[in-house]
Image (cartoon, rainbow, N blue to C red; front, side):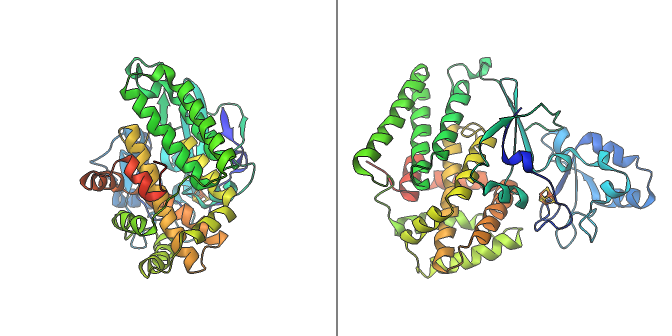
Length: 391
Ligand code: SF4
């Protein structure tokens, strides 16, 4: 099994966790675990199961969310005690954890029968581990038997004939390699991978996927030459006014969020942005300072989501969502840096709480794609507004 190195060090710290995963979102219970809960012997647990565990009428997979545990007024799982310990784990043992609880924050994917393991940045311990030069180099370990698989795809699947998923590994690996290449500024790497994805879906449309490798390798060389000749930042010209206007209604779709730490940082950042005390230069300086963490954050995101194949219904939607995430981060980093609050600690908190809010928002993705459609914003115009574009 292939894993990024940071996963060899990951350990859930439980009680002292600064943003416990049993706080802030509904806790999903799979069908098998639900049946165990119904037959539980412990009297106190039995009473609370009857009171707080409900069948999910909107379940999309019985192996994931057949039922759910409601949260208390502080938005904590009803089975999380005052010492932040899970009562199922404490009283009846680990075997009573649901698939989601036992797996989080790990993400298992299988591509062409090879298992991959990574983790979501919604867990604060994962974000800490990502701030290491070596975090995203890969090692092989022996396979585990995952209780939950996020994606199980085969490039040779008949359904993908002539379609981009048949090139999944080539494209995803090129994007990871590009985002991890720190000889270019981060913003330019985001620009490059956007261009690669656009080229890829254009070639799919024109039925030319057999030439994808050659064309994209030529693109990589083209960017390299551009740098050697001009030593320029790709994403110019960038218009701050257009960016602020474009991102205004996007950030609102996530607010108010269920995460206090996210709301706190966003209100500081938004106040600075709204008072227009901001410059894009401050942002460029800030991202350069935190290059390791941000590079690994994006490398991990692309790797674990099999980007651009699994977010949205089409790779163009996946690219739009990727740029939307980047735009929100950029807006808030610009705001926080204007207020002198863009510390390493705040960036880590921001990345973690943003991931938690974004990934577990029930309708943000649908809403934001609809908003872009209504305003006739395609991936190219989004890229232009968020980074700038070479015409
Ligand atoms: S968020 Fe991470 S460290 Fe915290 S309790 Fe959950 S898995 Fe453990």
